[in-house]
Image (tube, rainbow, N blue to C red; front, top):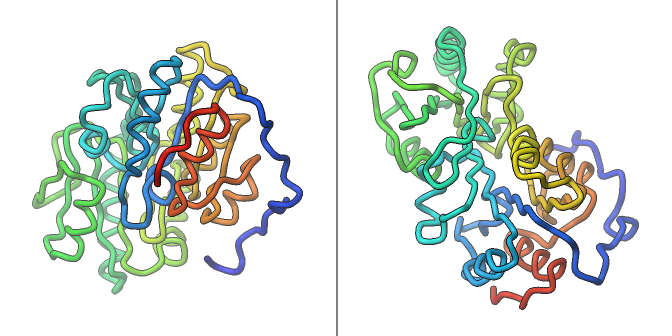
Length: 293
């Protein structure tokens, strides 16, 4: 990570320890990449028995990701009943196939964003755009290295001649930068920050959404709808697009591998994504059997 990032305000030694007794948790929200998934992007096998225990206790489990809904539904196939999917960084929330909320972009703004990315690519930046609709994601680049990255997060995608002209409700515009998204692409989108959310969601990804859209706003809407308080909410994250949802929960955990700003913002630390940190923390707080790695 860049050395200019804000250092944590607290260290692991001074951060308060969670209590030894079971905690009253009603909602668990976790980011996917760098958080629940390991670096090989695998769901831990121990998750499935944990989900069964959570259902028995009436605890709602909700993946919250920059990934599209179709991708998340495929990853949790067979266990998705009753689960709330906070997809596309909070711009599209779905439960049992029914939309709970969405926050589409204006068509004119999509055109402006696509034009800006094309100009950036014209200046030599190795960047590609993904226009994220409710039904599908849309791309113009056809080279295999770019499409390989797109497939990881958008199982439902189409190559089209003009991504700015697709017939779909566009909920997000994502950019993949083969270099550093934080150092190159995000600064180039500075003109949009006054009117939109411009979020670095990974080492190579930047997401642009409406100013009202983020994972935290989606979590707060879910809490209000279900009568769940921040004190009953457990959240895990590792990157900058997770900051707002950390603020929506009293039980907020940054992964040990998290971006320094996420570590600074969270109330607690969890083991890294490669050390099964999400499941180990859930088991500890809810007194569940410790899942196998």
